[in-house]
Image (cartoon, rainbow, N blue to C red; front, top):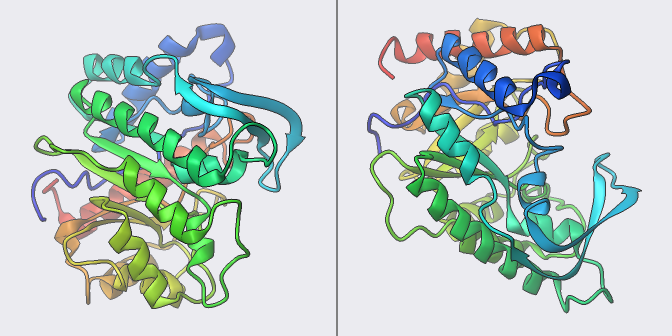
Length: 331
């Protein structure tokens, strides 16, 4: 799959919101963050999730059928529940993609929550939806339609985030969620279907922020085999054998984006250490089908940035520097 559209210098999409966001407004903040990404020589550009509360909001704020509660989940996010099957009230984030395309020639990227993740975390029996699978399939239809629209508006890299999947790949998998592992794969597979992929378009999946202690090879191969994503965004910042196993199980015809810096700690990674990890992955994965990024977003919830703006900048500069070591100036 090696070509000129691997978007070598990547990030998950969510960036630390500026302190004066409410004062300057989302549009100006997005213009500023586009310039910021351009100066960093990123090969993708996003709106930083600045117009949204958290990484789920693109869907939860744009469809009917969900109710926000006063509770928070174990991940600290506000809990939403599904009271009926969702219906889209129009495009979800396509208008922001059009604005990004007008601001720069860099490829616009969009990150969306996966339908299986939303179904698993919002389904509650007795509230008007018969099953988490039914909820997931309805969400998949909405998200698949949005992906097709985003591509038509100029988006070239679309990433679905499902933080729950890697927990199901361990030799001792996490307990079942409202959605089984098999149902989660089937639901997310529906969302990534795209009958025609224009040149340079990638549909990616991030299955979680950190690798399990050990990887069940058969379950990892099932994950990659069932969901027809072009690109897999995998954690690769801790140097564990499990991280390497996740890459090893990836089919030859899929791209990989290695999350080689940790956006939860300010200390910068040692370049030689990271390069050694990339070299190890290169033993069984062609680096021409690879990209580099942080291992997760910098502010998946607007109110809880993981680092300061300056610490974030240094991490992104490090990703760019490492990409230059790997590929030189050929992006």
